[in-house]
Structure formats: C-alpha cells, structure tokens
Amino acid sequence: MKIKTLLAGTGIALALATGAFAQDPTKVGFIYVGPVGDGGWTYEHDQARLAVEAEFSDAVETFYVESVPEGPDAERVITQMALQGADLIFTTSFGFMDATVNVAERFPDVKFEHATGYKTADNVSAYNARFYEGRAIQGHIAGQMTESNIIGYIGSYPIPEVIQGINSAFLHAREVNPDVEFRIIWAYTWFDPAKEAEAASVLIEQGADVILQHTDSTAPQAAAQAAGNVITFGQASDMAEFAPFPRVSSIIDDWAPYYIERTQAVIDGTWESSNVWHGIPEGMVGIGEITDAVPAEIKASAEVMIEAIRAGEYHPFTGPINYQDGSVWLEEGDVADDETLLGMNFFVEGLAGDIPQ
Image (cartoon, rainbow, N blue to C red; front, top):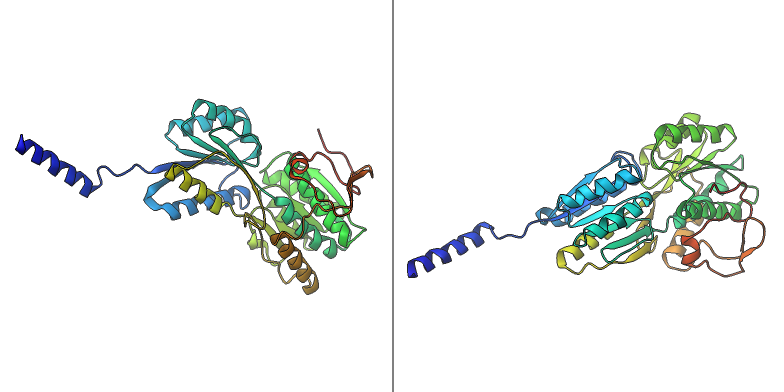
C-alpha cells in the first residue's frame, strides 16, 4: 500500500510539474458579416480578436468565420461554433440578432455577445457604439468644406443605427452651412464593393463633393479618389491609405477593450448579461487623424467638439430639433433620450425623401 501511495503521489507531482492538469484554454469565437480584409467594419472586429489573443496568450483560443450572410444561414454557423466548444461567441452584425438568441436558448452554458442589437437573455449580452457622435464630427467638417453644398450619403440598411448617423451628420453640417443638401442612396448591403462604388459614383455625378458612408468597404474611397475633387471619411476603420485626401478623417471602432473585458469575465466566472452603448468618452468610438487637407480653423473647431463630447459636455442631439415635417421633436436645450435614439425611424427637418420601410 505504501508503494502504491508513493507512486500515486509521484504521479500527481509529475502531472503538476508537466501541466497535465492545466486548465484548457477558454475558446472565444467570432462571427463576421464580411471578410476580415474589408478594410472597415469586419477588419476592426478582427483586430480586436487579435488583441484578445495578445492579451491572454495560451489561456485563450480564438477562431472565426467570415462572410456569414445575415439570415437563416447565420444560425447554422453560430450553432456549429457552439458545438465546437466555444465558451464565448461574439456575433458582430445587427442581422445576427435573432439567430444569436435562438442558438443561445439551445446552449445555456455558452455566453453570447451580439453587436448593435437590442435583444438580451441570461446568456446573451448586447453591445453597441454611439457612432452618431462620430457622424457629428464628420458633418461639422463636411458642411464647411463642401463647395457644391451637396453631400452624398451611402446608407446600408434603414435601421435606427444608420438613421441616427444620417440625422447627426446632417444636423451638424446644416449648423455650419445652412445651404447644405444631403442626397442618400440605400445600398441594402453592409459589404459589396461594386454596389458601394456605384453608389458613390452616382452621388458624385449628382454633384456631391463629399461622400459619407455607412457601408464597410473602401470602394467609395477609391471612387472619390478617382474623381479627384471629392472628400471622404473613413468608416469603422481609419482607411488611412486614402489620406490625406480624399480621406480627411474617419470614425474608428475600437472593440478591443470590450472584448478583452468580456473574455476576462468568462475566465473569472463573473460574466453576466448586460447591454452597453459606448462612444467617444469610453473610447469605443475614435476619430481618426484630421489631415492637413482640412483648413486649420475647421480642424480646431472639430477638435473642440470632440473634446466636448468626450467630457460629456455636449450631446449631438440637443434641441431645438424638429421632425422632418417641421413639428417639434426637441425643445431648446433638451437632449434626446436613448430609448428614442435606439428606435429612431424618422428624419429631422431639412432632410429630403422618405425612409424605406
């Protein structure tokens, strides 16, 4: 018995020494709507995935599936990821929301994080960025730099997130230039370089000398560069390869701190369902370098606005603001509440056209 006990004790010691009882790595999966090389939305999510790997090293194993269509196929892909042993899954597009919730019901021990949606469950969190804060900066710059007074906007889908951005950019362009007109093309895609380039070209043909986009590829940047006299702003990532002109600044989505925080929570066993909406103050929304193509006084005023938003001293939706039909939405000094913004389905006064249903 003593020999057996000694051998057993020696075996345990060896196992500890060799790491045989070491904890398996936490598996973190990512579902992407576009390719990791899109240069925009998915690119930044994948940069955050790499940041998770760098933060946790061998303690975490990450994997991803790119170019997953929104709709029924997303549920299949998310299910497969859960079956592969994922402990935490980030689904990174609005159209993955219902699929995420459906899969989560079948895998109660897996934690799910859904980007830009609003549905949660005991094992489903939602997270979003206040992109409209960045759109305010873009509108402020664009309204002062346009010479034609026509600003083109490429929308992806007519969902609240996109409508917020259009309204915010327009309000801040009109604030500095009452003659500004917005022309909107709905691309009905997040990532389709051919459609995005075509939309940009049509807007440029209609006289737009500034192009804003809420789509994921760099195709509109390339179309503007080819036109030669059109200003653009990077979307979701810096798109700095088109700087200093036509890309004069950008909205940069920085998901890394959030992804690291939520992964750590799973490792620690402290993860709880939550619903967060962060922006410039928290660093989830960043403003890329404002290049020297922007006149110094415009750049300075934009930087003042950025700092006011960062300090919580200014909200881009502060009244007076009217609905499109001229009726009052926000009185002087009133600030839009999050519930209204999250369900925004209307244009503000001065924007032409209807929102597609």
